[in-house]
Amino acid sequence: MALNRRQFLSGVAAATAIAGFDPIGGRWIPVAEAKKNKPIPPLEGELVTDPSSLEAYSTDAGNIVYGTPNAVLRPASVADIQKMVRYCADNRICVAARGQAHSTHGHSLATLMIDMGTLDAIHSIDAGEADVDAGATWKDLLHLTVPQGLTPPVLTGFTGLSFGGTLSMGGISSSFDRGAQIDHVYELEVVTGNGDIVRCSDTKNRDLFNGVLGGLGQYGIITRAVVELVPALPRALNFQLIYLDDQSMFRDLWKLLRRNEFDDVFNMWVPSPMGPGFMSVLNAVKYYDPAQPPNQAHLLRDLEHVAPMMQVADTTFLEYALRVDAAVDGFKAAGMWDDVMHPWFDVFLPGRTVEHYVREVMPTLTPEDVGEAGFFLLFPQRRSRFKRPSLRLPQDEWIFLFDILTAAPTPGYDAAYADRMMRRNRRLFDKARLHGGYRYPIGSLDFARVDWVHHLGPQLPEHNKLKARYDKKKILTPGIDI
Image (cartoon, rainbow, N blue to C red):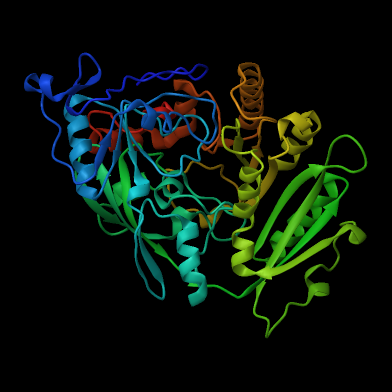
């Protein structure tokens, strides 16, 4: 499906019962016309084609790119996905999996969309691992594992995301010394673009395993995963340290990273009470058992924050893990999330240039660049903890994910606002690339062929090899526009 990233596109959807697809006319055809075309295989689930239902699948969390699919598969089994992917490959129909649709630039849009939410079972939880369907969410798993004293080692800030979604993207957290979620997967079940069901791991079909983890849906659709679990301490102590300048924040941030005494460390920028601009709120989080409470004075020794402004939140581990989910629920209840445009900007920066980049960029940002329901975030990460090659990252001892999670002031599509934010994102990305940065592709950014060639770099031959082997007809996940 051709996607114009500035305009709404209406797909062709038949309201009658369908039996096949006309690849020349680009439409699903009713039973009466099906004799000339290969029929749709029998399915346990449902193939939806009525316009009112399809409209709900016409965009994602960004509300910037629109493209109504021709049909949506609500599978009842992995076999349904396999059958329809094979059918799509035979007819050269583009197809994409859709989890929670939390990316922001039309990544999950395609002629046929597969709604993974109907496959959301959590099959088993053992001492060191969980076996889950790709449509289940990390939040679903947390509610079951935390009462057992277990948690995935890496959690995204917002946990209401599907396993298939974050494992296809990477899955970055504020836990700075554990890598990404894709670094804590033992095994996957994948439906390739050729329509084969393949089990893969570090010891079995390793090329597909490494390719799919962080591979942006280009080689296969993750349908099931076995992920790592680790012990979860009962409580989380979150120190919110306030800084009136970024120089002192960075000095303390580097100090905390090198000490490695906290579990999570990340920075937020919020509007400054002193006037125009933003001030830093450095979050330093320690998980603990109430029987052995942490020594707060020791943890905060020799820091430069404005001590009288510090805030401390002492919560259960689960409350801390779900803090962003609670905030998003609040925004939704206030009408400030659904149908709101989210032109997010997300880029990885090497530690050697991050301060210079922040010093150049932050003074140029205004309240419009974040919005009332948005965030500025900085996540430090130890580079050596990342193992999967598909997630493209700078080379440095430390890397930083810089996020501008912009939210529009009101619901609805605003073309002028979208144009301003897209031009901003491009300007900030070009600057980041000069600083050795790489895109984290959850955000909104127009990427040309030359951009992808630069992004993939030495991984490009492997990308082409995997595409030729596992998605021969090149039907998978066209929305990201590689």
